[in-house]
Image 1 (tube, rainbow, N blue to C red):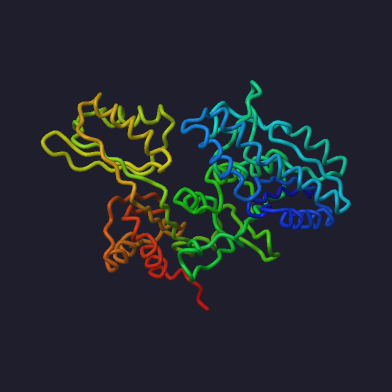
Image 2: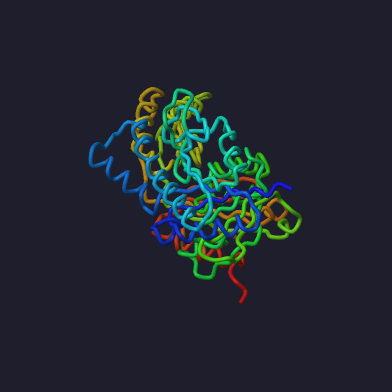
Length: 407
């Protein structure tokens, strides 16, 4: 039986030396049970944010390649310190950067994609009985340039290693004890989910839940890697993320999320002709900008308005591109609204239950919350509203669907 486990510890789990020592004890406990251990670690606490601040003190537009060089240093500190802490407990451990363990990526700096992983070096050290510690969030290109995998990329590192090594499961240790029906900081009466499907977790993560990076869920789903989300600071069971099972289908809505990090852009007076939308979004895609929601108004006298949402961090870049597009296609002015929030309900059970949208919209209406945009998928409904009403909206919808604790 393969007793290999991949564990991942986030920045809050290794925020200082006391917490690093605690993680070392947790890892060693698994090792004592006979498990082979590969541990993926993020940078200490808010190190990543501090590194970003340092770069901004130098320039407002740093090279993406140099940002990767800078950002990858945080994890190198944490893996070395964790290895030292495990040594102190009398166990053998060895730390590696992403490059040293052969995590090969494409050349998309700050948002690289993993192409392949050469597990030979990890397997060699595991055969020697060592605990292997790997820096999350980073890799290397075929031409030896360091890359990073985007915010939350340590999750992706962990899942990818679990798949490549054939681990029993991937354990995500964080500062929360699992996946909840809503953000506990927003809704007081949340309930922890014991199980959730890959599809639901992917929708929740994409809609704003910050427990896991969406790309890590995509990889887990593609290769059927079981994930266990649990707290670093307790031994209680967390949330298992796996394939859809029958018991999941009985739950209509699994969770409500809020994303306050998007902005809406509107191209006014767009010529209503075939191929215009394709031109708009092709130019945006060529600038590596991801679009979330899109809405096109009813045509009037041959013109229409097209609105779409992007991440706030891409707002400035997107506005520049959108204005160029507008000039090229003969559209009118380009406006934006960065005072929005996206509220989403997610659930496998929505496939076989009608009236979910009506229930959600009625809840918002009773609370006098206006809806700006709507988008739906098979298991998700999202609405864009005024950001000031986000907390009120999430609490109302959470209550409407009876998602809170029953005792």
